[in-house]
Amino acid sequence: MGAALASMTGLMTYGRRQFEHLDATMRRLIPPFHAASAELTKLVDADARAFQAYLEATKLPTDTPEERDRRAAALQEGLRRAVAVPLALAETVASLWPGLQELVQCGNLACRSDLQVAAKALEMGMFGAYFNVLINLKDITDNAFKDQTHQHISSLLQEAKTQAALVLEHLEARQE
Image 1 (spheres, rainbow, N blue to C red):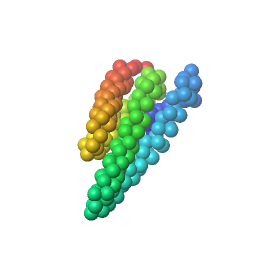
Image 2: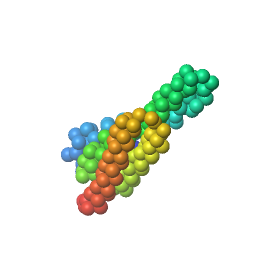
Image 3: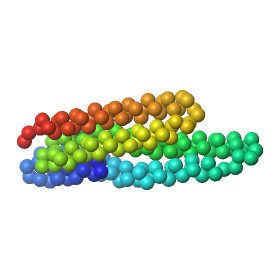
Image 4: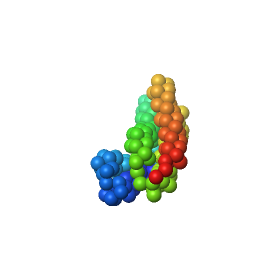
């Protein structure tokens, strides 16, 4: 939703006479938001499917040591997949902040509320990705992977909080 609203703001700026000096900027800013909107929708669907590998692994037999080892490995692989998708979503959201910050500075102010909602929606998407990663990360046995991933997703969440606050602050201060 955040990427779609940012794209819409760009489209509401592009081609308008009072903003024609920004057409080149909008031609540069709109495509990443448009593409991210489609990508984020796919990632939400992929997230549900990613956990399926873990659920399937829980049904594997555990009668012999080999079966238990195979099941344990499949569970770990399923958890890694379940972490990878929301992490990719978080990274996609993180890639949008620079463009959103630029759009906030020059986009059509009639879309101010759309940009405000875009910022909060992107922050909320990051919030959801963060907790989705953490819930699946807790049962992974590779501590180095867990620590690295936890640090990465935590920094992405903190950056989202900071960036969303900056968007709101810049929009509040902007007059035209």
